[in-house]
Amino acid sequence: MRNTMKQHYPPLVLFGYWLGPVLIVACHIGLVLPLMIGLSSGAWLWAFGLYWLRMLAITGIYHRLLTHRAYSAPAGVAWVGSIVAASAGQMGPNWWKGHHVNHHLYVEQDQDPHSATQGFWWAHSGWLLSKNFLPARLPSDLEQDAVLRTIDRLHFLPLLGLAGLSFAIGGLDYLGAFLLSTVLLFHGVAMVNSVCHAFGTVAFVTNDMSKNNWLVAILTLGEGWHNLHHALPWSARQGITLVNGEVKYLPDPTFWFIQLLQKLRLASQLRTPQTAQLLQATRLESPALKV
Ligand SMILES: [Zn+2]
Ligand SMILES: [Zn+2]
Image 1 (cartoon, protein in one colour):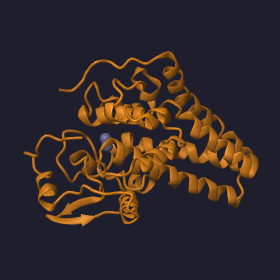
Image 2 (tube, protein in one colour):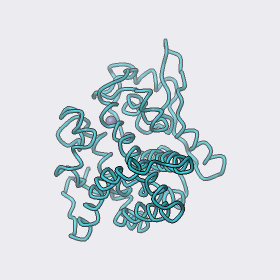
Image 3 (cartoon, rainbow, N blue to C red):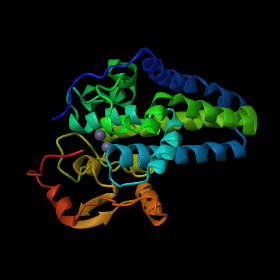
Image 4 (cartoon, helix red, strand yellow):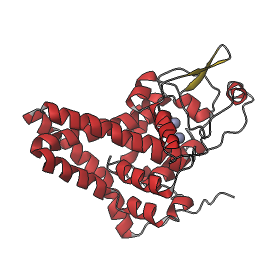
C-alpha cells in the first residue's frame, strides 16, 4: 500500500533545498553578464557542451534510470550521472523523483505538483515558487542509497563547482556561458511540463493532456515524445509512435545514449514496448497506467 504520510524535512535539509530556486533565480539575473560582455566562440562552445551533457544526465539518469527504472545500471553510473544532473541546478535526484512520481500518479489532479490544468506558466515554473516545491514524500529507494541521499541534500555544490570551474577556465566569458547554458537548460526541461501538456500531437490514449512535441523532443534529447511517455512511462525508448498501425521510431538521443551505455556494459535490461503493447495503448480500454 502506498505510504501517504507527509515527509518531515529537518531545517538543514529545507535550507539546502531552498537554495535551489535561489540559485536558479540568481542564474537568470546573472544573464546580464553575457548580455553586457558578449561571448567568445570558445564560450559558446562551452555553453553548448554544458547544455547537452547536463540535459542528458537529467533525461538519462534522473528520469529514465532513477525515476522510471526503464533500465538497470551499476550504482556508479547513477552516482556520477546524478552529480552531473545536479550541476544543472535542477535539484537532487530524490527531490526530482519525489515530484515526478506524483506527476505520473496524479497527472492533472490536485496532487500533481505541476498540473497543467492550473495554467501554462504554473506548469512551466510557477509551481517551484509555491508550497508545492517540497515533495509530499521522498522516494524510499533513493533515500536508502547514502550516496544519492548525500548528492540530493548537497545538490547545490555541483552547480556552484561548475560555476567555479567555468570561471577558472575562461574568466567572466566562460562564467557567462555557464549562466546562459544553465538558464536555457532550466527552460528546456520545464517545457516538458508546460509545452508538452499543451501543444503537440496525440498518438496514444492517456488520461491526461500529454502531447508529442518535436521541438521539445529536440531540445530535451527525446523527452518531448511525452504522450508516449505518459502511455508507457516504463519504456527506455520514448521516441516511438504508430502510423497506420506500423511502428515508427522517432529521434530519441537519450535512448541512443542508453544503448551506448549498454554496449559499454554500463546498462542492461532495457525495457521497450512490443508492438502489441503500443497498439493496446492506442485503445480506450488501455490498462491502468503504471510509473
Ligand atoms: Zn507529463
Ligand atoms: Zn516520467
